[in-house]
Length: 485
Image (cartoon, rainbow, N blue to C red; front, side, top):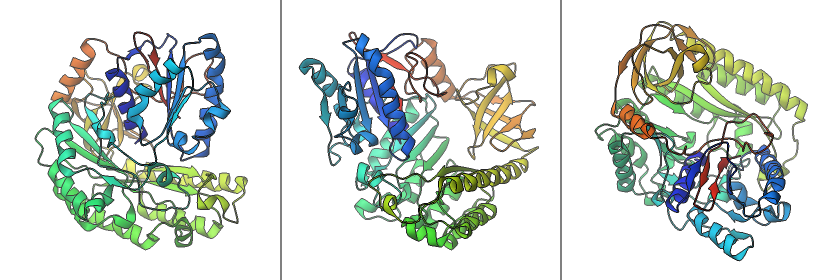
């Protein structure tokens, strides 16, 4: 969701006359699009703002803007903690950024503008897509759940759904531009339709995507187990271009902890969904999110989480150590788990997740998989003479670069020769099919253009972390730097 928001911010600023700049040049405008899910987001933001203070002191015309969830939360404190920030904007008014930058420049004072509700659905804003072959498409924003550990509903607001026709029109337009894969986005994506009273709207939307000629792959993230219904499973199984891949957050395998988290499902329901998904799609790859050390979590609670991991056979899991988020009910709950206990449990969970994922990946040895060739996903590709792609089940596969030209967006069929916990390798013959998406990538890169949205922090001065590079953007009188914290 934040990546797609950053694509919109980039599109807005380019529409206002900004263009990306070379990474070895210093920006005049730096934009942070922030997250507030975990505590380290706060630490990273204020650390990096401090890092930029002396840079700005030497460049009087430089502007710094902070937006996103953390800005929505800390609206009153950002300019107090970092008075050199020029613009603060929230989750509901990202379209105001160019105007706020100009107003701050003219008035020579900080502009703080936070709206409490969405006025314009973000998908109507200009967007600078990061990829020529894969795209994010929002179906809704906001969330109606009240999980005790999560601050997102208070920052993103209640769920707002787009009309199906608007979503499908955006998908068709993307396909016409050469996109072959879309990922449907929502904080609680499978609750789509709640605002206009159709509980089966999401399954219908998946089936409608299946009728769009030229759309090869459809994914979605993230669904909620409480609202995951059989009509969605049927739509996934029966619609050829909907991928047999499901990311469904578990958070905990303990019913007692799930109740304390205010997650409106229990272990039995979660495992029942997985059983029905695998019955309909035996090749489905499942992934999840798990929090370790939620307040009051006992060793027995944690053991139950490990049991679910063993039974569910996840292909991947995003694992998190619980951190207190001020403003959430969980922040003031008794029986906060000691950090050393959380760390020890976390490591046991990571070890088990890796073992299970490795065992699942080994089952694919010798099989042939179809890959959508990716750009920038294989960090060691140059050194190993390999390329990288995503299988239909979203597994990452590194394959030996063939003698023929293969472009990001093309399709490669390979045989898996090696399995690791987090990736597969195919060091054999490669069958390549050139695609319209590959043509779109080639057209985009024929004349070098500014890079769109990147993750990480600036390269001004010594880096604070080992994060990836961040693009810049320049106007006739300024530069842009979108970043995610």
